[in-house]
Length: 492
Image (cartoon, rainbow, N blue to C red; front, side, top):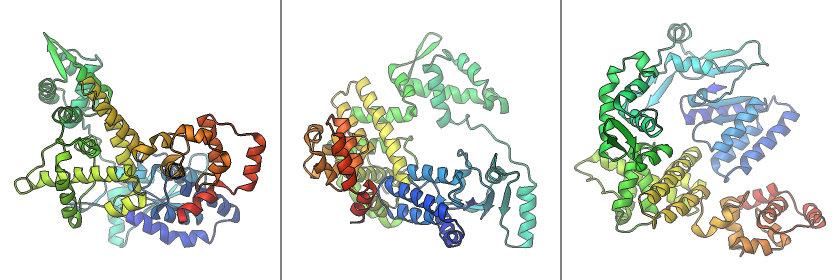
């Protein structure tokens, strides 16, 4: 396992390693890696990144970073654990939270780049976390780690600063208002505390209180309580505090109280023209959808023009570009984020979104997951707050975001094993409802691109159609594999 400082360098190292590793892997491993590569190409849409990943995997090498599609990360991790992939290059995020040991760990660079700050050395804790991956339980008696130095002086520095050094202390981050407000609301909503003193007693048993002193939190807790009371998330009766219906639902939905307030105010104030973009920008405006998509200098004017064209659809007032430049740039980031998701539900391909908006597959799917949940939370709050005219629209939009389709494809895309590409193929071929699929001859379904015998049989099983055993056997013999059909269609 080779740790690189950036996504680009992780991909570059994998490309360099692939020709050398490809020379030494066995024929049996090659065949196993071919199947791994096929699984990668069959998961999600075909993009330049997935094609590159599949080609490298065939040679026993892969890269891993947060910009990869989740299914591809899972396939790579499983293949590396099984010993099929011999070299895995990764960003340091892999060192945290994923159980993926290696025989040898190489740290290519001990410096990280932070926009606005430049390069800085990693912490000892991060170094120990990465080298701790070396040594596979049940396979290796020892694990080896390599930290690369370019000079003798640098080697001495690295020995003293990392190899022989003790990790830094871990400090609780609970005493931050942004973090604390969700926990205070949850503590009240769940009934663990009914008074201000009850909250102090509860938080006095936390790691933060152990490291510091509960008195350091009292002022902050009091400030959070005033905020929650002012925004009607909690109510006070005598000495007791209770979560309002609004506050309790926000806590149950696991969203930041500020996100709940933003959604509440947006649904109340609405926009001159309510569209899907209105709701997508609404959830992009919340702190729970973070980080937003970055707006580069070369696309600043393009995003600003898009914002101006859709001004009537936004539920929030646009900041003045010249009075508050920072807020305006943040606003454009939210607009671009909403624009990316809108392109996704209008069935733009992953490749076109990646190229047009400069996002990576993993970033796209992070946005899809977060906005899907926030739209569900918005629909729940809409019902609670009496906006029943908006709730069905938000729910339909939530399903469209999850499937990445236009409204007419939803009934088809919801079928297991279909997805956005096959749903479009079926719809364009005239199969526009579940009833159409139920009546469809299976020979007609299997004649369509991407719809092989197995997919056709699965469709029939879901919609209630029958497939005779002899008909299935004949079709399976006559047709090629589903993967061949998928490859032929996506290549074209």
